[in-house]
Amino acid sequence: MPRQNSLRTFVTIVQLAARSTTERLLPLVFSLGCTIVTLFGLFSVYQSSIGTASVRGMNLATVLWSLAMYSVYWGVGTRYIFRDISDDVKDGSIEVRLVKPMHYLLWRVAHRLGKQIPMLGQQLVVNFSFLMVYVGAPEVHATPVWFLTTVGLFVLGIFISVMVFICVGLSAFWIENSMPVMWIVDKLVMIVGGAFVPIVLFPNALRLIAEWSPFGAMMAFSQAFTPDFLHHAPFLFVSQALWMMIMAGVVGLMWHLAMKRVAVNGG
Amino acid sequence: MFVKTLHHEWAVAVLSWRTNLRAALENRIAFGLQVFGMMINDSAFVAVWAIFFTTFGTVNGWDVWDSVGLLGFGTITFGLAFAFFGGAPWINKYVADASFDGILLSPNTVLWRVLTSKTDVAALGDAVFGLILLVLYAVKIQATPEMIGMMFLAIIPGAAITVAMSILSQLPAFFLLDGDSIAMSLYKSFLSPSLYPSALYSDAARIFYTVVIPSILVGGIPVEIVRSQNWLFLLGLWIAALVWVAIAILAFYTCLKKYESGNAIGLRSAN
Image (cartoon, rainbow over all chains, first blue to last red; front, side, top):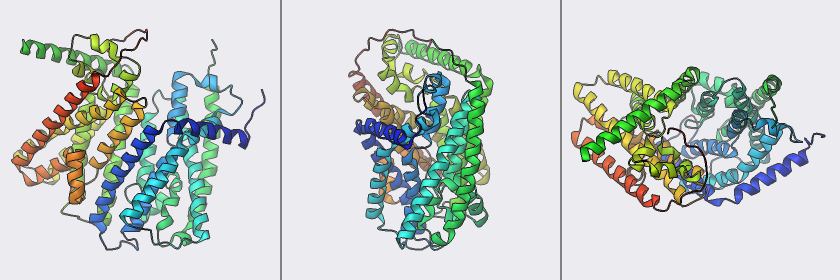
C-alpha cells in the first residue's frame, strides 16, 4: 500500500482528532478551571514579589504575560506524544499502527496535535482574558514584525518539542518504563522554559545555557514580552535551527534502531 | 469487635503493601529508575525557587531555605500518601472498568481496600527526597527538638489532606464519563498551588487555598508552624485535616451509591 504522508492527510487526521475532543466538553471546562486556579496562585506570588516595581526592565504585567506562555505551550500538548508512543510500544499496538498508510510518527503527531487544538484554543482565551483582567495588556510594540517573530519562534519551538518527546517516547523500546526520562525532560523544560521564573530574570550564565539548550529553544517565544526581544530574536532563531537539525538526526537514528527491535507477531 | 475489625483491616493493608512492594521490586532496574527519576523530578522545583529567590531576594520574610522546607513537606506528604494509599488516584479507573465489583464483594471496608490496593513506587522517591529536604531545612534553621517534633506532627495531617483531595478529585467519575481527565484537572488544582511559597500569597489567595482548596495546608502552613513554633497553629492543621478526611469519606460513600455494577467478565488479580 502506498504511503500517504501528504500535508492533506496530516491535516485531515488533525481535524478528525480535534472533532473527537470537542465532542467531550466537560474535561475542557474542568481543565479551564484548573488553569485559572493555578495561574491565580502563581500570579499572587509575583504580585507580592514585584508589586509596582520593575525587575530587569520587566514590570508585573510583562512578567505574568511571559509566565502565561508556558500554559500556552502546555496547551499544545506535545509532551503527551511521549505517552502515546510509549503506550503503543508497551501494549504492542505499535505493530498494528505501523501498517497504517501514513508514517507512524507523523500519524501520532497529527493525532495528538488535533486532540490538543481545542485545549490550545481554550488556553489562549482563558490565559489572555485572565491576564487582561488581572494586570492589563503587556507593554509591547505589537508591530507585524514582533507578531511574525513570536509566531515563528512558537512554531519552530513546537517542532523541537515534538521531536524531543518523540525521542522520549521511543526510549520505551529500550527501557521498560520511560516515565523517569519524561520527568527529567519535562522538568528541564519547566525550569529553563520559564514556567515559574521568566528566562529574562535568570542569572546571565543560566540564561545563556537556557537559550542554547533544546528545552529553552522550545520555549523561546516566551521571551516575546521582554524589552530586548526583537534585538535578541536572531540568536533565538539560530539556537532553534541548530536544535531542529540535531533533533531530526536523533529522531531518525532512534526510529531506525527502534524498528530493528520491533517484532510483529500477527495473530 | 471494633478492635478486632481494626486489626483485620490493618492486617489486610499490611499484606497489600507488602505484595505491592514485592511486585514493584521484581524489576529492580525499573524500580530504581522510578524512585531516582522522581527525586530528580522533584529537585527541579528546588532549582526553580532557588532561581526565584536569587532574583527577588527575601520576600515577605521567606528565602530559598523556606522554599526547601515547603518542598520538603510537600514531597514527603505526597510520597507517604501515595506510597501507602496509592489506590486513591485509581478510583476513576475502578469505576470505568467496573473493578469496583470485586472490591465491593471484599469483606473489608471499601474505601480502605481501594486506598491500599496500589502502591505508587515513584512516590517512594518523593518521600525520600522530602525527608532529605526536611533534614537540610532543619539543619539550616538550627531546629530545636521541639521544632523537629512539630515537623513530624505536621507531616501526618498533610498526607491525610493529600489523600482526601485525591479521593475528592476522583468522585466525578461516578457521574461523568470523562473521570480520568477531570480527576487530573481537579487534583492539579490542588497540587500546583501547594508548591508555591505560601507566605507570598495575597490574603484572598491564602483564604482560597486554605478553605476552598487546602493546598497550602500540606506545605506552606507546616513551614509557618515550624517557624513560629505555634502549637495552636499545629492543632488547627490537625483539625483541618480531620475535617477534609471526613468530607472525603462522606462524599465517597455518597457517590458510591451511584455506582452501577458492570457486567464485564474477567479475572481479578490478587489486588
